[in-house]
Image (tube, rainbow, N blue to C red):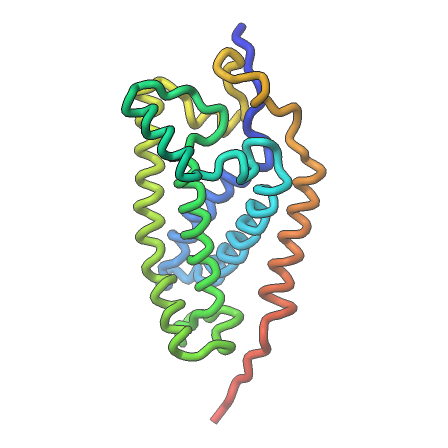
Length: 230
């Protein structure tokens, strides 16, 4: 039986699949005709919590979850592209430099989408907790971002799925299964890249910090909206 070793920790895998679910659910509930806009807003808060957790996990998580281990520096990108041209690409235990770009792009786009949602108001169905704390000009910018950034997210997701299909079909390297099990074949992983555990206690602490922060942001710190009746 082939031996497998742990590469992707459990918190990162849960984040990945919850992230995917949140994007899909947010898209489905964004249609104001389906009366799910309240759920859409709560999903936005959940996405913020995921982003806070991932940011913290990028510093305190396991080896392949830490930003420093896969940040796509120009040198890493140039060397990786050179290896592709020379057909000398080695199997990456964690994210390869091009995959790293996608990670940071998705974090950036989801951050724009979730944060902009805090400041918008459609005057009919819903409003973000901070919409009345900014000028109309800023609100219009946030509305523009919230309505248009999602198109870029769809494009990024399509590129991500195409890359997965390429690795699965052409290079015969499983991408999906390791993100479910967290494990890869030991023969294809350097011993120095194996992680021993998922740092679950630290992950739990990071989850608590993320929940407390989002609750403070959208409930405790949100300005009181004054309503005027004529």
